[in-house]
Length: 124
Image (cartoon, rainbow, N blue to C red; front, side, top):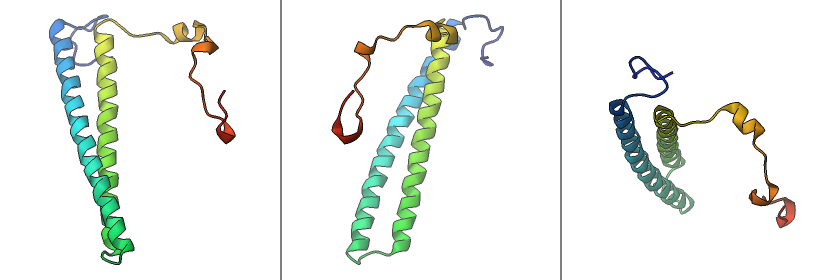
């Protein structure tokens, strides 16, 4: 399951867990940086769109900016996915986690479930 843990048992060594924590921290910093890049590219895209509507930019420039925006979004989503995987690995390395059969047996209390919006603004 965890290839970087020599002689994997139920838990990894403190050093491995510390390394995984550092990985999580690094990925969080990277995700924050990609979020900033994405938001700046979103602003640039909106600016380019406004310029196109005003006749000050070409459609090709808008499409190029949209491609840049999509690339930034993909980098952000990829990093967020890696962060989630790393966080799950850390939890498992620390001895935590859950089993599928535990969640199937858990009862659901409808009074604590979030209200969801139905059609025409009604809540359930």
